[in-house]
Amino acid sequence: YKTKYLELKQTGGDGITLTTDNIKSYLSQDNTTLNARNKTIGTIDPNVFDQLTILETIYLSDNLIITLPDKIFDQLTNLKAIDLYNNKITTLPDKIFDNLINLKTIVLDNNQITTLPDKIFENLTKLQTIYLNNNQITNLPDNIFDKLTNLQTIYLANNKITTLPDKIFEKQTQLQNIYLSNNNITTLPANIFDNLINLKNIDLSGNNIITLPPNIFEKL
Image (cartoon, rainbow, N blue to C red; front, top):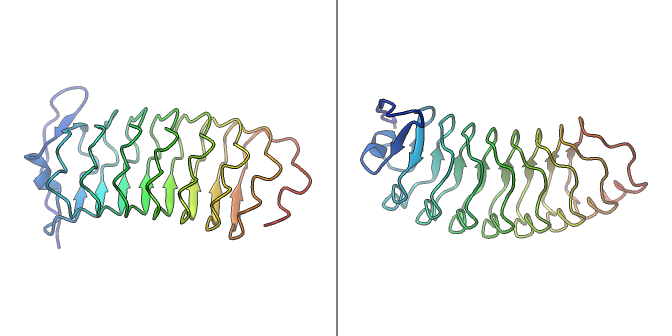
């Protein structure tokens, strides 16, 4: 099928608003895909997705979005992927992803996120890939990944992370790839990788690590 597009004039410095009226022009014919890349979208109406319950993929990359309404995705239980690459997002509402029980991929690269709520990913038990490269994240909550037992890849390169919690990857037995290059990490907990029985790649280049615990990779 072909996706129809509508070019919308920018209404101000903060871009246009995605509404229930203009969203139709960005939908695939079967209403399973929203493709609104690079459309100068600055704000999104809170109820814009309420009637689009069969949506499976949302592309909102390369826009001007700073904040997202708290319940914006509440009706999208069939959603499998969200792409919010290269916006201006600084914070995320605590429960914004709570109902996305089928989500597998989330892309938040190239934003301005500084912190993540402790339980933001708690209900995303099918999530496989998280992209958080090129943000301003300084630390990660201890249990942020605990419920993500199907997680395979985490991208956290080019942030400002200084330390990692001891047990941050404790329950990620399916994890295969961790990308943490170009942060400000100086040390690593001795047992941080102990449970990662399927790990294939770790990238810690471009950090400030001087020494490593003697047996840090022993169980990999």
